[in-house]
Image (cartoon, rainbow, N blue to C red; front, side):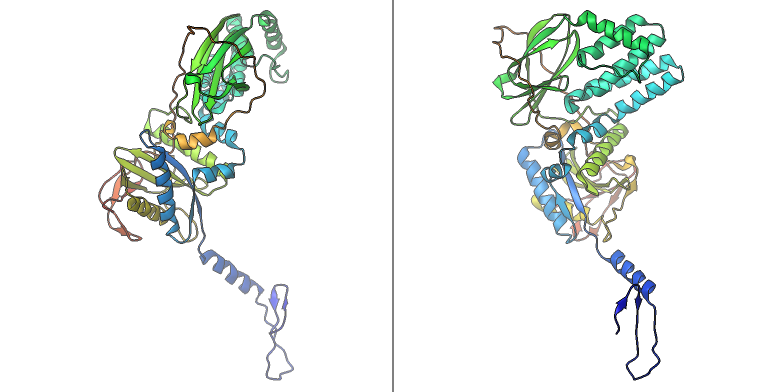
Length: 457
């Protein structure tokens, strides 16, 4: 055998013949190599997004993650990453995930309003912007982002100005000023008439500032924000607040969160307690289909920014733990694997094996294409995932502390619910044996998919 030269292998017979025979096998060799690589097993990292369910203890959440990972490893090919491991892969891109997952509908409506404005459909534009405003308001406690809210206020002012409603335009500009007093609108985005009105309003309210004394209930230690800006440690006084709507959020050292929305009058002062609760990721849609779309968006955002190809979704619903794999790149959702809840360790391991079996040796996920196959998760019910996505705030400036009044006006924050990653499922019931896992006939109802029910283990 002669040396390998480029893409050709030079071969000469060894029987003493002077006449050599040269065979070029480069392309054949390349095709063989590609075929060998394609036929080999491809391992997949499966990201676990945690259990969505209101009545699941921290110990049970940890046990579920541990047993499912053990079952996935029994496949001999794949690995399951915990929520904490996914967080490590995000490398600080948590805010991007929240923006893409929680704000998707609000951003879409905002763009719709802008398009209506460009077509001089001012009434339709304002209606779309009003809907976007509601969604952006609901998302502030999760994203700590008021930029979108500020932009909607400014665009609403522009629409109202074109409709001849100067009073309404001034109201919208005041709302934008309250959120970001130092921010100056870009002259490339807004006409001179609106910018002049903005500056006029700023001069009117510059000396009408108020102050709010804030404390986390129960003297909890934690960090506070106002309108997305870090303030410092609780308790504190937020000063220099312009009249209008403001958003206060807090996070304890244990990871609980609190939120409060106040509409302040000119020069108003007061004191409020904020009651921390379990963290959540958004407000859930009412319809199952809309919840599935919310869940799919969250899954896609996590997969993209944590660099994983496959995610495992799970929720406790109607006495079952329902589990599903999702390949965001192909928008594929597998059949739902269901185990009775509470589940034994053996049942959870079996579920992990059954899920891994729905990934081919080449790493392809078998299932249904489209978000209709996604579990309709309640994102408000997964504190484990919410805790890692909602990062602790970093104090920037600390206002001077003051004593709280003896009888402060106490207002609790709204407990916002979110739509999350897991939910109902299945039209068909599979019964039989799959990779050694006993399947039983406990169906899960879900549009577009089948279910695998594991019992008796």
